[in-house]
Amino acid sequence: MEPVDRRSFFKSVAGTAALAAVEGRPSWASYAGPVFLSTWLHGKPANERAAEVFKGGGSLLDALEKGINVPENDPAVTSVGYGGLPNAEGVVELDAAIMDGTRHRAGSVCSLHMIKNPISVARLVMEKTRHTTLVGEGAFRFALKMGFEPRTLLTPESLKKWQDWKANPQHETFWLTPENHDTIGMVATDGTGHVVSGCSTSGLAWKIPGRVGDSPLAGCGVFADDNVGAASATGDGDLMTNYCTSVSIVHTMARGASPQEACMELLRHMVKTDPKNKDGEVAVIAMNTRGEIGAACMNNRFHLKYALWRNGASQLLESIKLI
Ligand code: ASP
Image (cartoon, rainbow, N blue to C red; front, side, top):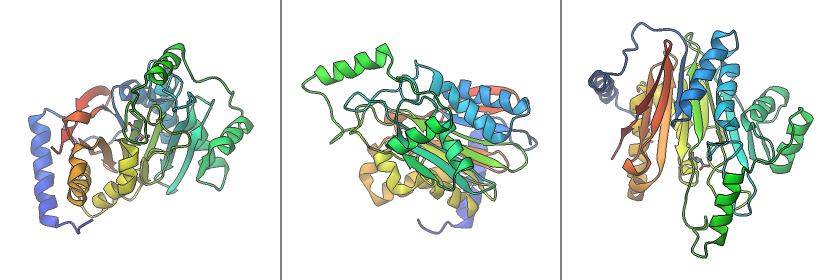
């Protein structure tokens, strides 16, 4: 990525503040309590649960984990956890990652089957092992060892959708095209400069078995650093992994950018390297250690709605689009 000109950052900081005023977003100036920022509509109940856990004395990691458990447990959310749409062979394979900005340490699981809370397994990888990532059968056996109960993750609805997809001779396949996805990504601060990042997903519906997207990869789906801030991502992981989106955003913030400007810079960089990325499904969220936030997506086709919990208020907002 190009070096960032400080003057353009100052301009963009002013621009972002002006935009916030126009959009009626809250001012950040005096607030120093916890902030929870998540992707998509399912991010709202996730943030609310996270805030409740935090207010009840849980750590910021507890809050993030329990918050992300909400869409994981909800069968109506077909892109995360229980009820997530399966791969091309009808098996639900889940990906999740968590990162602690104090320890600069992540934990993740990829292609985890039969366990509905992969974010909780990812956290245990981070806390109970010296590893960062476990995949497939190994991740499953680790989860069993940690006391998780195996269960089917297909619901009658997700099974029916897979059967319909399979029965359609014209069905799209992931040898070529993406379909049906929406990760829960969450970034949070406790109000004292500590940040965390987490995400959980069933990935792309009908994916080729064994496919791993951006979500469970540290630096892609999650990144958190208490010296700077945290970021997460949602969208076409096969595209976004190539840009290491979350670490790229945090490093841009480290050079002085606001979270919003850092998100926009990542999107601009993607278009600069390949103009076809203008049509990509890409969305990102970011937060700095002061609890200032950013949220952006590439285009109207994949317009990110995000959820923000701050100072007792839980809101759903629309992100800024690059194009
Ligand atoms: N990024 C996820 C993946 O590619 C899907 C999503 O966030 O919508 O697996």
